Image 1 (cartoon, rainbow, N blue to C red):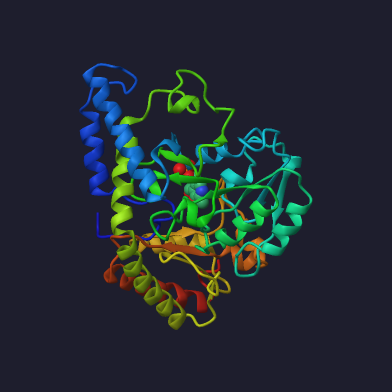
Image 2: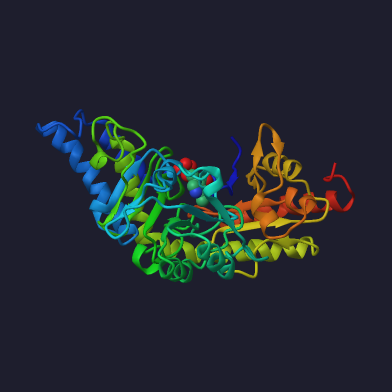
Length: 386
Ligand code: PLP
């Protein structure tokens, strides 16, 4: 295949070499981590080492990490009315979520739809803390879910400030940190999160592994999603995905050590890409540009730009980007994130997301800008809007 530039890291990141090596080593082991013999203990060691590595990425204790099959499952495990703390054993009455959450949170977990309340965001894509305060006042024992950073715009949410408000109202805060972890600071205590969701494949681990992390021992999950053999302290039955978990741990360790340096490099490349984008098509909108954003993400739109057309045009030029809008059953729907930020459907339907990662290079940015020059020229002649 001709050389390509992969700019869809928010969809998934390539496997880090250290994670690939961890998979290979784990697959060579025969044991079941629940077995007491030497083979079983060797497998158990991989799982527990990974638990330490994942915990270290977010400043948690290993015993507070529950491995799941995905970020989606971790969100589902967290979002239950039955979540209890030592101080509050009655069911949570409301789930408050920001209007820009990932669909796995928007579906409300195990809350009935009537108990789920959307909290508005401002025009820059940040959760509105005044709206949060008002929504909390209408709930008795709320669980709140706000993402660390948005997957479409990259806008970083004011989690520490939200946590203070949620806790003052007697609520619990769950943070979907799937896009933020490994890219920006994500210490569970500094954020003030009670629960945190992670997904391996966004940080260079394999797809199909995630984790729910709790801040303290006194937070209990009385309702496992999967019952059976009692693995993961009864919270997630089923023989552990040893290779996936070991690779998640390896990726977390690399992200912890290299994340800050990689973020600085990505930010410089992303800023150069944005400067080029705007220079080529001055009427361009970069969504959420006034807010703090992930260092790797750009979501842009331009009058007449259609995301489906643009994604295919970039693909033909050897560049993988994605449409910012949700695409289901072949139809591109206007993004709920951009709608919540107040953007019109025609502009948001055209939104294109470019997300970078640790292998992105200046050559990739150049290739992208060359392709964008062609596309913007076609657009100005009215061709790309077809
Ligand atoms: N939360 C956010 C913010 C995401 O971007 C994603 C995946 O795109 C998920 C949750 C789901 O994670 P997973 O793919 O591991 O189910």
